[in-house]
Image (cartoon, rainbow, N blue to C red; front, side, top):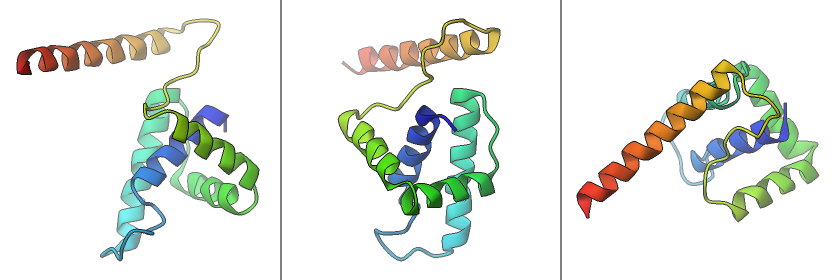
Length: 119
């Protein structure tokens, strides 16, 4: 799993309070499953990788328990930027990566149009 993928995963899990630090939740296992589904979808959409929920759960616990230096590096990256981590730069475009880039540009353009309408 690349560093960028781990940053994306940690970002989603921390924002959604995956560990349940901020309150008792009803049906915590169902809630965790839904959050992990979001992580799976995000990694597939942004990086084109397929990871199982179980694989990501193990990676998350491994980061927190055994790879604390790596976890600290990821948290520093997340603290420095409030924006979502996007696909890393590559030396070549594939049809899939170009399509994702076009979709991101279209979404940003649409958001900009909405902001212009409101002002």
